Length: 167
Image (cartoon, rainbow, N blue to C red; front, side, top):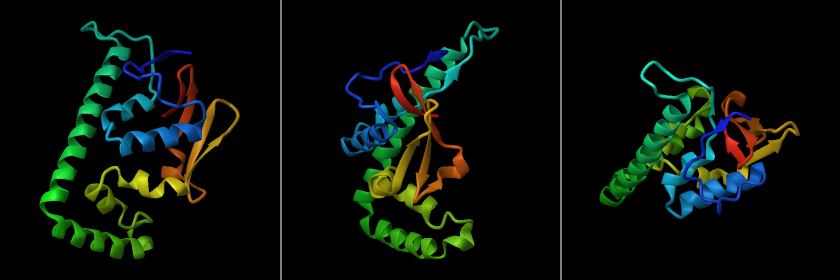
């Protein structure tokens, strides 16, 4: 197997099965450990070194670090906005629900975009019971929401030496 870029992934993350990895992602969100979510993502680095001496593996790790920073900031900002403007968030939530009720008119996404903007990690909390990971028996797993592939099957999982990861 190629280089697994999972630096910073503490051993207490339960990722022995695809479902356990979904549960771990939810636990990280619930515990406010948003910064650790990128450790559940696997990107296979090729043995490439660019002209400036940067390897693909180190570039991926830099992106992972920036993603952790961005997710942490997104969580902090959305929480502060929700606390400061609760009435506005309630109104936006009602608008998102109205859009979701007419989901087919919006390409099936309905109010999902608004929901994500209002509570970036709430989707996982609210939809965990509807999310499933199907181990395909070949080291990969398919993710579905209400038995439909997520993003047309573009979001999946792979088994690595460190456990199951999103890819």
